[in-house]
Image 1 (cartoon, one colour):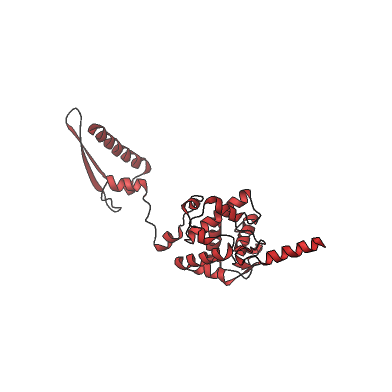
Image 2: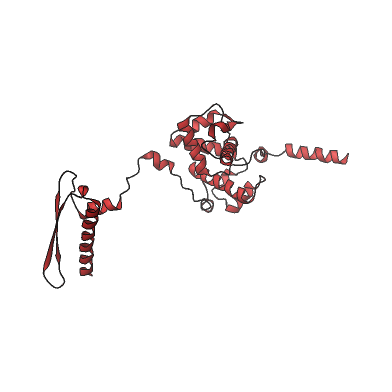
Length: 255
């Protein structure tokens, strides 16, 4: 009888808890890499969202364990139910950057019920860990779950304390990709040629001259009349080695 009364009291106490701390422990927070999660979203945008996100759909793209973790992540974020996509998944995939940020922010706040978001901008790493320990996860899984949360929060532009941001090396790249194309990276060899040999045209030769003052007196005039785009590999190496010698000699003469 006493045992039944204890159970009854426990049931009353659990039902009287505030909604904020009545957590759903049936789903653990995502602990897959957030970059892998973004790869999934990008892939779904190209591939299209199927009627069911079952293993037959994603097994060629992701390994069994990674795919299973990704599906669990989608369930936790309320983007799928079972294996069936919910409208929020399509909305997230098709949204532009600004709208995607807002959608992701709402998904995080609605899914991580154990996180006190109003305190997140002042929370310490230890406080964040204590919130995550609400779930029965620890060790490597706990660290990866926290890493996913921080990365996703940075992507969603949620306010995080600096000490929590430092727990993750993740930096959002989506905005820079959508606001405009990256400046083309300069090939070192091309940069060298454009700096030291001016006005190179593929259709004609160009004369480049340089006068080298010798240390013992006198000077040496060097003239190069070639089309660098038409040179053979051995000639190109020879011409560039001569230019290097001239530059090194001038540098040593001035020091």
